[in-house]
Each structure stands twice: as structure tokens, then as C-alpha cells.
Length: 399
Image (cartoon, one colour):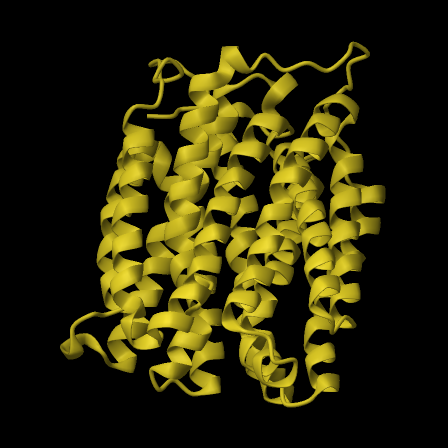
């Protein structure tokens, strides 16, 4: 077995668990609103705090990963977010829930920052985009698993016990920790000198990466963070919601790998531009503003198309990782990614405020405008990306 297989497998699974724990709460909004009397702004804030915590986690643990190694931080991150997910399941007081959610988010940031780099640093340079896409497929896998969980035990969300059982499934990624500890090796060798990052040297990459990731997170979460509730409001049954989320994100996981392979044929940037255009079309179908498109079949098709088109997302993180040296890779990639996550979290929180004031009926107008604006930012960030890594003989083959 190739030495990097365990690193890729563990990083993919830990990332899937990361997303699973992040998203699981979105299926419980109705229960928490009725049982704990939490408002929609409070509910979407809880979701957003997981993303906010990620930035702090990515910054702090990213520096540690660049100094001490990726593996130990991956263990800490995976174990940490799993433990605090379990703690969150037993908390019913909003300030405590908010605190646990933020700490959980910090460990989520630690896992992504270290896990992704741990995997891609062990593969041949010509395979970086493909392996990065495989690892990032864990995002969609984790989201798909939330849909499957909801499909099978979502009906139990009518009691506190049922709610806790549902949320406790987020502790399962603890099982990945021993696998990382005993089966994963790393090529990174911590340096003995004091860690420093010269922001000036990488400012252009860092800013553009942060804007690109912010645009992607805002567009994606503006739809998927609220879609379970919006779908039920639009006439979807519990089964329809669970099945659609599982199917769409299963397709998204496959799309990550497909786009990774296609990047060697058609070019990374070209695929990103095509993906952006497709996302705008899919957003309009999944959140229709015209009554003629407001049907379960059309909306479902829009969600599935959106999930497939977003398959280019890992190509952006691959470009970022390929553009900076290993000494600062975890910090640059992790922090820019999680700054984007915070931007998405802010929008998710604003969605709760929007719904409270204007209701679900007006939501599609807001979502489509958000997608147009945020995806335009992604386009500009990628179009103006420094292309010095794009030489004819470059071993990473970014085109």
C-alpha cells in the first residue's frame, strides 16, 4: 500500500466528520425553536459560531502545524470537535450552547488546516489537485451523511431524547483518532527555528484566497445552510428533504473527484469559470423567484445541479496550496479558507434575521442576489490570480 493512502483516507474521513458535525444542527432548527423557544436569529447564530470558531482555530493551530507537524494537530482537531459535539448535545442553555459551538468550531479549524496539508504533502506533485479533490470530497460526504441520518432518525426529533440521539451521532468521528495516531505517517519535519510568517511576501495570495473562499462559502451556505427548512416550507416531506440532501451531496463528493481529474485535461481556471456560471443557473432553479419554477422536481434538480457544479471548489484550495511554500502552507491555506467560512457564517446568521422579518416567501430573492454578488468575487479573485506557477513544465499542472 502506498504510504500516502492512510493520510488521504484519514483526512477525508475526518473532514467528513467535521462537516457532519457542522451541518447536523440545521436539521434541528424546528425542534429547537419549538422546544427551547430559540428564535431563528439565535439558531442561525449557533450555526455561524461554528464557522467563526474555525478562523481562530485555523490561525492558532495552523501556526502550530507549520511548527510542530500536521499529524498531532489533526489528532487534536478531530478529537476536539467530536468531544464538544457530544457536549453540545447535552446542553440546553443558549449561552452554553454558543460557547460549546464556538470551541467546537476552533477544533474544526484545526482539523481542516492540518488534515488537508497532511494528505497533499505526501503525494507526488503531479497528483496534488486530484488528491486534494478527494480529501475535499469529505465535505460532501459528511453533508450527505447528515441527510441519511435525518432520513432514518429524523422522525425522532419530537423529544429531547430523540434530539440528543440525533446530535450524538456527531461523536462518531472520535473513532478516527486512533487510526490517525497509529496508521498515518507524515513527511513534514518540524523546524527548530522560531516560526514566523512574512505576510508581505504572500499578501497577494492570501488576500485573493480569502476573497475567493469567502465568495464560495457565502454562495454555498446561503443555500445549503437553510435549505432543509426552506424545502419543508415549500412542500417537501421529511423523507424528500433527507433523500435530496443525501443524493445531492453524494453527487457533490463525486463531482470533487471528477473536477480534479478534468483539471489535468481542460485546465483548472477554465473549470472554475464554467462552474461559476453553472452555479448561478442552479441557484435560480433551487431557490426560484418565478412561480413557474416552484415545483419539487425543478427545485430538486436545481439543488443537484448546484451540488455538482460546486465540484470545482477544491481546485481553488489546491491552487492556494500550490502557490506557497510548505513552511507557511498550513497557515495560509487554513486561515484563508476559514476566513471564508466566517463570511459564510455571517450570511447564515443574516438569513435568520431576514426570515424573522420578511418570512420564507421572500428568501429566494435574497439568495439569488447573494449568489450573483459572491460568485462575482470568486471570478475576479481567480481571474487576477498570480499565474507565475503556470509554466509549461510546471509539475503541478495548473492551467
